[in-house]
Image 1 (cartoon, rainbow, N blue to C red):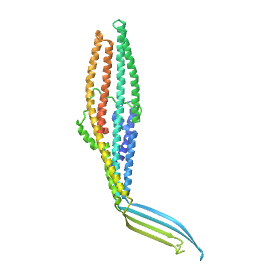
Image 2: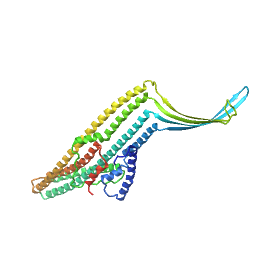
Image 3: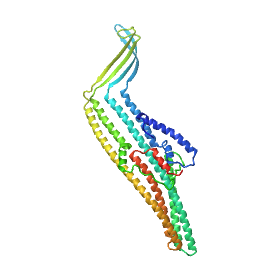
Image 4: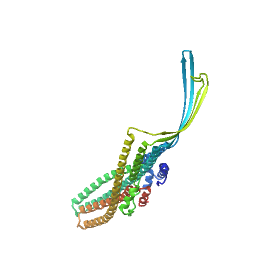
Length: 454
């Protein structure tokens, strides 16, 4: 989603985009319930269901309305009034009984001519829209990362379960081989019992892995608001995308400009400085253009002129100036307060920049380290496979015992699980790096989709 619209239209555009995307994604889902879903497809569903994102959208819409409320201080105002009264007057000497009803109606209007505080309040309202927009972008980026985490958790849990089942089959085969060797006298009962113990251990791990997959699957279903999600697995062999740019300082500089947390702190500093200017206007005059029209009808006359029907009309227009002279030092203390709040906003901005810079560096080096770990585990997988083949051959010729084969099997399958998890960590880490830099968008999910089985 591209944020190039004016502040008054950004939030409405985002909400409309979500409303349009949700029915389309739901229709696609219903058309193929048994097919696996890509990460972008699941994101299209999640963005219309995720409560934190909906909350940010509502906050953005409220900020736009709040800014328009501040605009009211610059626009004219008008009011209509009407009334009816009844007056009874009794005079003893001479006895007179006067009843004088009266109907009145009027309209008044006012246009601010010079109210600097209202102008500054309007500018603050616009800054509030920008803050809400930054929070909305942060919520969208957070959803991308949370969804990707749940997506890769399911894939990792699925890989673990499949690996354990393959390991269970291999251990079962080794157990049968040990039993046959024992029956013909080529091995001791120890080999068979070791294989049985390893089989029981793997079976227990399989039960735990199956439960973990159910939990991770439920978490993903809950995140997108649809049951039965099925993430697309990575196509092997996989070529992980490189980090571009490949210098950490470039990422840090990008974060200092684009990261929503830094932008919110920078806008908050602007709001604090505007608050200082607004507080200083407490010593300034205000000038308003005022106009009014009133009509009064006396059908029975008045007390001074009984039984004389009359209608009075009065129109006025003028300029009113108000100059504050003394307010008990409230203005001076308000200025001191806003100056202190400006210092706080400066400190918050510095803290946001330092925090973001640290997060970017941590994410960048984490991805670089993860890529190196993937390469090392790929080499370890090949070595573990060679070691397993050698131990199997050695067991067949009698130079290796059954436990050596079982250990080699366990090492190979553990390496495969670690390698799959390392790949997911690199892909997720690249998304976290973009989130830390403030550049993460739904389009960043497309390269991951290209790595999956189609």
